[in-house]
Each structure stands twice: as structure tokens, then as C-alpha cells.
Image (tube, rainbow, N blue to C red):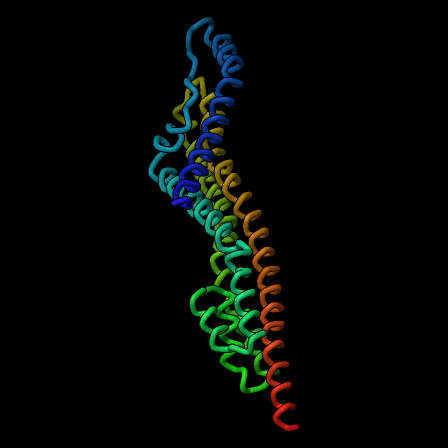
Length: 266
């Protein structure tokens, strides 16, 4: 539920930013353009209406509409992945303290079965890594270390695979924006033959509309790449700490087994 709400709010914020920039551009360029047209037309009202953002999206041809749909899809994916990254890289989700304390208390009492039960009742990256170590405890501590490292790599890959899609959005979005700008420029220069005396204004408006795709692509790319870097570093840090915690817990169990063997030997 919270993920859906955050996605909707972030989407509305993106559209509001694009609309605000559009309104500001229209207000800033209106006076100069109007004055120039009136001078050229000797007082005639030849002002060309500044197209709005909706006009740029839906009235620029089928190719432009398709590119905008892909850009909007990238924005939705980026927002959803950012929310998912926030939830997936939470420290309490990867390294829950109550699981560590429960397993440590069970091992201090020499109850491996209770430690395993604690992991089974609390599934997650930490529990999966612990279970990989417990399943190889009879094969020696070196094997346990290798099993823990392999399990940590697997859990890291599961988390980073989802985070890597943010990097994909950050790479694709500006490319889609550039594609929209290039196709818009081709369309703008292609329409100059029928522009007549007002070709300068029509060309300027067409190029301005074409550049909107680049703006939208960069608005998607920047937070996507930033989120990818932050989530990747955070997940790697917490997973390394998780591996160290697991090795510490396994060491407690190994020491207990060595002491029992020495007492039996005596």
C-alpha cells in the first residue's frame, strides 16, 4: 500500500515539474515573440500560440507519442524501483537484530535446533546465510566459511539484480529523450517548406517542443542513477556485515563443539 502511494505521489511530482517548466517557458518567451511578429506583420496579429505540454505529447505525430509512452513507462519503472530499493536495502530487513539475538542466545545454550527454528520462522537474507552454514557444520569450519560466502554472494545477487534495473532506467531514459529530440528536429526542418513568412517562429517552437523529450529523459536518469549508486553501496555494506555476523555466530558453535570434544577426551 505504501509503495503504491509513494509511486503515485512521485509521478505527480514529475508531471508537476514538467508542467511548471512549460508554463515558465511560455510566460518568458511570450512578449518578445509577440513584439517581433507585430513588427514584421505591420501591426497585424500574427502571433503563434505557444503549445502546451499536452499538445507536445499528443499532437506531434505517432512516433513522438510512442517515444513519450516509453519515457512515461521508464518514469513509472524508475519510481517503483526507487521505492523497492528503499524497502529492500533496509538494515532491519537484511540484518534483523531480533534474529541475531535469538540465534546467539540459542547457540550460547547449545541448542542448535532452536537456532535453526528461529531462522525458519524469520525468512530472509540473514536466515538463508545462517542455514547455509548450519547445513555444513559437520564438514569443518573451512567448508562452513565457503558455504557462508557462497550464500552471501547469492543473496547479494538477488538484491542487486533488482537494483540494477535502476541503472538500466538511468541509461535508457536519456537515450529515449535524445531519440525524441532527433525525430522532432527532423520533423521541424521538414516542415519549413510550408512555413511561409513565419518559418523562424515555427522552427523555434518545433525545436522547443522536440527538446522536451531530452528534459524528461534527464529528469528520469538523474534520480535513477543516484538511487542505483546509493542502494548498491548500502546493500553491499549491510551484506558484508551480515556475513561477518554469521561467521561470528558459527564460531560460537564451533568453539562449543571443541570444548565438548576435549571434555569427552579427558
